Length: 263
Ligand SMILES: Cc1cc2nc3c(=O)[nH]c(=O)nc-3n(C[C@H](O)[C@H](O)[C@H](O)COP(=O)(O)OP(=O)(O)OC[C@H]3O[C@@H](n4cnc5c(N)ncnc54)[C@H](O)[C@@H]3O)c2cc1C
Image (cartoon, rainbow, N blue to C red; front, side, top):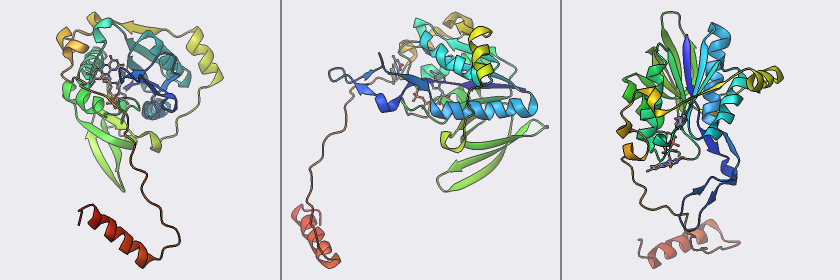
């Protein structure tokens, strides 16, 4: 069994700063981490390795700095790591990102399960998993909290949406997007850390390696244009009334709504 796990390196969001002039994210000097949903997805993949001996291949697209999260994945137990890094990938929107990932995944055939995070904490679109599945013409299940692999090549997947869970049976190969809050990732082991840095190599793939039409990659392949970006605006402070009964409070709210011509 081969499981491919897509990992994105993201800025640690508690530390995010916005360029006040350009309105873009300042990535320089900001600590980076493995996207939390992706770490949960990696845990699900590693559980398949523990149970069925699956080969776990991790795949990321980004600058060379993203080798850090691939080594972290090695230290957790991943078997192979590939970084798509090339100026031709730069400036990608979600569709162009999915195009590059799908191209690399095609090169890794045969595979059984592709695991992605539900969403990245910086871009936050949750589009890359479903788009990649569409480009590969594969079935997809999003919002996955757990999965059970069956020997007949199907998976029983538990999908959690708001207050409900659904159990679906899907044929492999399949793309799953995993919910971070539902899975507790394992820690790196000391032996794993030593192996990750001393014995394992991150494979660096350029755009030429993945046989994808270059017009579908990077800025050229991105139909989305960011027109403007801005922070939240301050709201009016409002009024606070102390020691008011429910009936008086209701009257005050009513008067305020009438005053603003909302009633
Ligand atoms: C017009 C435009 C230009 C942009 N230019 C840039 C730019 O120059 N530089 C830049 O850094 N960003 C840029 N972005 C942001 C970039 O498009 C997104 O960060 C990226 O496409 C992933 O989208 P997301 O973060 O919403 O991921 P989501 O769709 O929320 O991610 C879902 C899952 O997909 C997988 N995934 C997503 N991205 C990757 C990846 N790179 N590698 C491996 N797995 C991944 C992960 O498993 C992740 O959990 C741009 C966006 C737009 C719209």
